[in-house]
Image 1 (cartoon, rainbow, N blue to C red):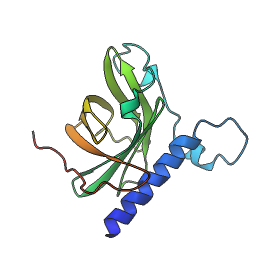
Image 2: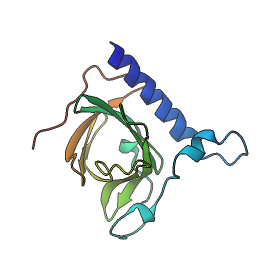
Image 3: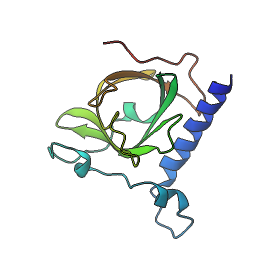
Image 4: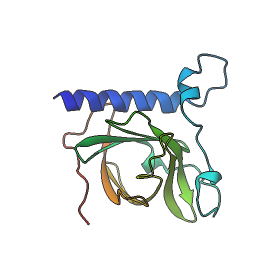
Amino acid sequence: MRTATVAAGLVGALAALTACSGGGGDGDRTAASATPSATTASASPSGSGEVSGAAGKLQGSWITTSGGRIVALVITGKKAGLFVTGRKAWCQGAAGEESGMQMIHLTCPDGNKDRVTGMVDAVDAKGMTVSWSGKTGKETYTKAEGGKLPSALPTKMKQ
């Protein structure tokens, strides 16, 4: 039960952070200064072109588990954020169409490279499969609706 509460809090916090990151005011910038800004074309290691807006199916909060940790991926517009329980930093970057594929490019301030570039293999209203270029490999995520955890969390797929 505690894991579910932590994960629900993570989804809500990431959604709030992602939604608030586009403001132009001079308000409190504590959270913004602690993390790098989202990137677009520069996030692509191949330089193959700018990432355009993520398709509607990618939008939202996605949850999976890996190595006993909860992984929350939030995509809003062209921005993507990822948080893994047990890590101090969260990663952010861009998500969208690139060369006809749905791609996710992340930068982690702690230097972690497990989930840097991801290609979306499949996505529907309930789940999404992403193949990451790092050691993580393929992961299946479940969509979290309204800040609530899905009834069953997926686990890392064996290859």
